[in-house]
Length: 285
Image (cartoon, rainbow, N blue to C red; front, side, top):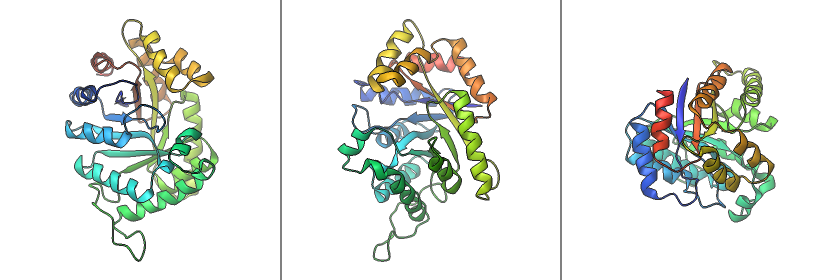
């Protein structure tokens, strides 16, 4: 089981210097991946730009969006940005994509919230086409640069609806279960496996899960403040009351995801303090 750590870029007020220091510290530790979350109508750092900054100060750790809200973006621009980040990082990018659920993000991006699934499907075809070096249309030239990974960055897709599950089987290397409990994640992955086989895919889809964490004195109180601000409502209350805040609870969380067959778990931070990287490293090392 591999363990990744999220960047604190979605926590309001985090200085850019902490993002860079966090990335350096994670790269020197036992973590397999540095991850970002994505929103538009929130005071967070842009997910791809934050990973580009992290790439510039790291050497070995992989970079992952968990997940990027693809329908907020132009497909051609997203293909170019992802290929650029993959090339600049030496092929370390995993692009986790989803459609998003917050309508205000789509209003701000001047995109139709209700057609985001259909647009996402078309975007996936466009990404593959452009990463293969083909032009977008007969009247345009190819869009570069070429990604470091042949055929483009590793692609994961998140979501729990039947269309989301089907997209994993058609387009992705695997499934990312964002913010789900182990039983929920296992149920989603089982559906992906059925769709995968029905699509005639060989092997098994990659399986990545995620959870929030916080460590140290008053971790529940500190972390809950951010969680409730980010999510609000009953969903935020549920996460705030349940994320692991002790070494024992984090070990149990990782073991629970390993038990359902996850290959990697991403632990997203709730406290923007650099010692969180060291505290977590000591647990998962």
